[in-house]
Image (cartoon, rainbow, N blue to C red; front, side, top):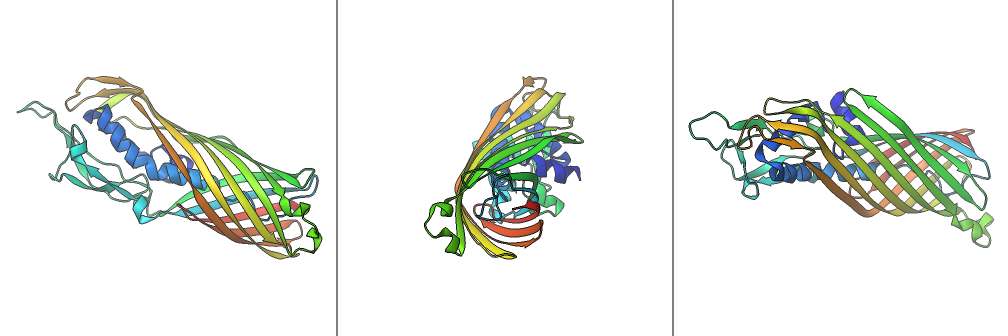
Length: 335
């Protein structure tokens, strides 16, 4: 459970209990640890930024003045095979080597499932037993979970001039060693209201701009190879999404679709004090070793349908992009 929640909360950079030995990589030196962590995190960081921007809309029609809707939105992004692993080439590392003698091989990303891959750091002292040997971390798929889950609570209110404001908020929430805080806001404007004969048109057209921000933290356990205190990951992610939306204007069942563009950045700080107990850097103390910055951008398209019965609505859609996603929304309100 801790593994699922940790990656669902902060898959851009916060690790789970099975990944606690990520700090062991500091035995190979800061440069090696940073190179590995950068490749390990990249797909998860990208997937998070795509996932936190789904489900902003279920219609191109905006609410009338002071009309409102409360929505519980959940989505799941299937993990593509090319996001589950990366090639670790030891010739690009200063101290890290595979135990089986391989020069390079595929290893798991934070979304992957490759397990049991052992590496070592040569202690540099012949005849001694100061080599650091440890297993590389696996990822979310190792728990037989082949999707990235995200969820949010959203409120939408109609304003003047055919405009609707949307707000998302998750106060800081903690589970064991992981915590998350999230907020976002968006503006949707119904462009078709300005067209002549709009009331006779079978479809509505609108534009949406939305911003999202996430703060996450994960405290992980010390190991025998790298000791220390207050060891943690802190992640911040900021994203913008721009959508052009169209939907039918039927009384009960409607269909909607959009094309859009997403752009975002995330930054993960590896913080705390690390005391290396084995390897060539034995007894060296490292404080706040490095940060990992990632960006994501791309076109996405959505197709969906919504059922409306009085004040209750349910919608489902599928988004196509670098990370595809199935989205389900349960909504209560008045148009």
